[in-house]
Length: 465
Ligand code: ARG
Image 1 (cartoon, helix red, strand yellow):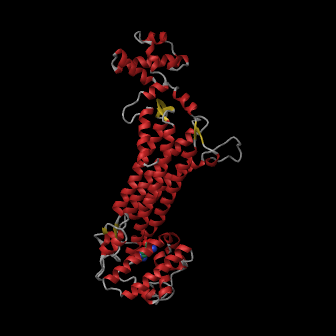
Image 2 (cartoon, rainbow, N blue to C red):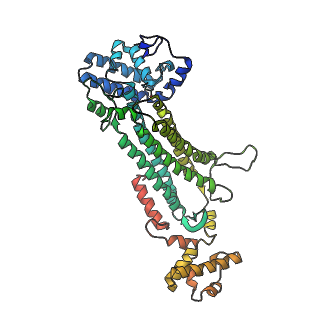
Image 3 (tube, protein in one colour):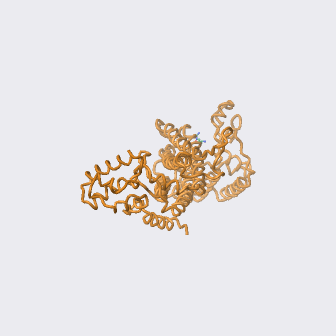
């Protein structure tokens, strides 16, 4: 080790040291130091296996494990001497081990390459990140379910094309996101299932001639099995791509909810207000309360998609097996997880504290002839009209109301009877917002009873009680 010029571990065949810029573009320590614990874990498993197979002596393994204990302690208490000139976390850990225990450290890299080492560490890191992030998704779901429970019978306009369509309940609207988030959460966990194969022992690309036991290292690191093809093991990053695509979809959902917060807190909608902790002011316009966090979540969703695209671009034309292009996989993946996690926390904070304005929502729900479908349905149900005719009659009544600048429920019975003489006063029972939304009791529908049921189920599923 270090037998060549300069400090590199691979310097044996080199006469000169790398240029400063070469080091700058090559070094990944600032990024991959986050995998330090994973690197130690991988080395522990590898050394134990080498000893078990008689490739390392028990004494050397003991020295290595003891040294790795100390490395681990240094990492925990913040005294580990990270050195950028050693390129990456793998070289840093090994070099420190050498300082601590001397010669046996040089035997650790037997039957291993940085190519299988780095992707083993990266899989371990990503597996944990998927799990951690899935818990943040659950935390946001829990907040949404609680708020949905408070607002199972809060009426608001439901929109299509952002045009008032039919009255819905706020609880129903919030639960729609709970469902989306559940798919996000399980998508993340599904990635972890496919990811969970161990590349360690693939060595540089072709496997090794040493009699290693790959099942043993796979098991020690909690993988389901060793990867079956060494070229695939060191050259593939679809586990990271899959995680990024799942994060990209998940962030897209956060962005839609963020957009609704932006809309709802605008003075034009005035359906809700964010508390001071989640608002910012304007330096020039004293009246402003800006939903910056929601806007940032909206923007960061495309950042995460960009990170996916960046990695996909790095991989798509890469011949097998490893190439240094793959070093940036970690930067992209770490940033995507960090960004999503921050967004999920911000959304949970906003949803937890946003003050909904039921009166404003209720008033808006009654505007825009939102119960026109209920009128048409009533004509079908009570008068036996074919739906197409009912649609036409309703359209004429809507036009009449529009002409008067009134809502449907404001028309008199006489006015309606001019359009269809058989209409009776019972029709007014379905023209209110409450009657309209409450009548939608089909499974998955918006009525308060159905929403309460869903809230109860989610409360149980998420164990919120
Ligand atoms: N820092 C490198 C990476 O993240 C480690 C693998 C280096 N392998 C190599 N053949 N140079 O990809």
